Image 1 (cartoon, rainbow, N blue to C red):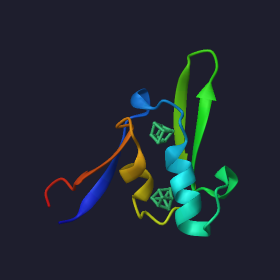
Image 2 (cartoon, rainbow, N blue to C red):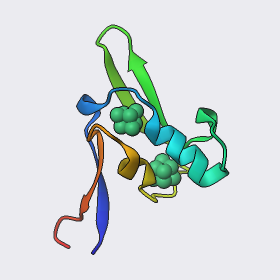
Image 3 (tube, rainbow, N blue to C red):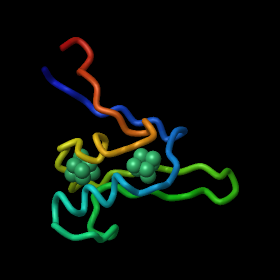
Length: 79
Ligand code: SF4
Ligand code: SF4
């Protein structure tokens, strides 16, 4: 069944589990700078922005690791 990633930045806690999972998956390194997803905090609003690099391989492992539901894997609509 085709799956897609759903992004809900409002649920992000800034834990960076997604980015660490990506770095370990793709580079075997515990290094946030190697991740293809990045988390940026808006200090005024207290919110987080989730940004994906063009190098993202769409493996969805970051979403499977997200503990808050900010990134989720669901069955693709119409699949
Ligand atoms: S979907 Fe992209 S950002 Fe997420 S773990 Fe895979 S390569 Fe990294
Ligand atoms: S998207 Fe999920 S795993 Fe990534 S920083 Fe936000 S809460 Fe943590």
